Length: 334
Image 1: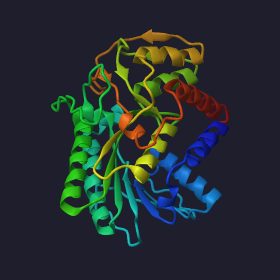
Image 2 (image 1 turned 90 degrees about the horizontal axis):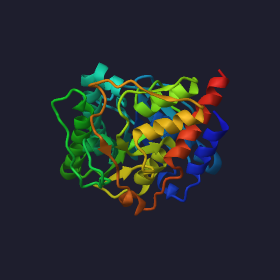
Image 3 (image 1 turned 180 degrees about the horizontal axis):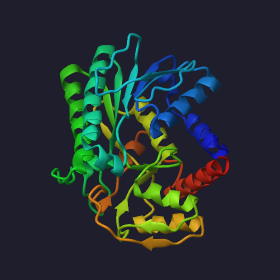
Image 4 (image 1 turned 135 degrees about the vertical axis):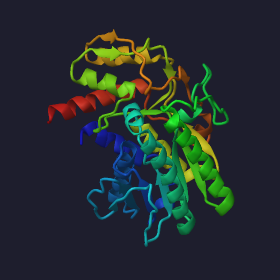
């Protein structure tokens, strides 16, 4: 683990949150080996080590993993019923395909992991009387406007596109979560993440990740559109700090946007910035790819989560620079 990543873990772990709420508690998380899931677990381990909070994490994933004193890794497919004999106080549903190539190659799996996983984990939340946190996405808004979208905006999605399976699955998960609240009294909160980026070890086909991989390898960045899209982004450290804030203080039944502050840049301008970190150029090779988002505007209004005490610790540019540095250091140590 690089020094920058260790620093970020400490920054999040020392935020003035109501950490007492998860002291001596058990958190079950689906997608525990994923990008956000592993970062979440790192924070729990950090606080347990420093403050002896005795927070236990149960990580569900298709890969399983290696358990430790404060982490129980279970190999599981959340499309199947989830059973656990011990106590569970919090449940987080993170498991999902998360980037365009996966949507295109496994559209059915994308939908079923989200919806069936959500249903099975909500059933478990009813059984354990656990607080439930759903990881949703900016994708539920579809095509936005030039004005940042608040949580009441409904957006537009063409449901006849295979690419929309992810968007519609997240929308259904949100409706399912609200239905379990109404029918069974589940205490639940929803996190709507902007496009999350950072030094993920897994190959990611989202545009910003592809730009970064090219830069780290010293290759010119290829932009396959005119780059005029305006999106909100969230650096991984801020995504995880927002996740913790909602787990601890998010109001039952509410959805919250999580995003870094808008810097007013287009996708193409972010590509130019990433290229500048490595003294490279951006080349335009425009193509029509049905697996990528057709939204030209997807900007998030974050006033709601800021009103409960959350603030991003990094700007998008800060996060991109840190991502580049971490990936270069990691590549150099291989």
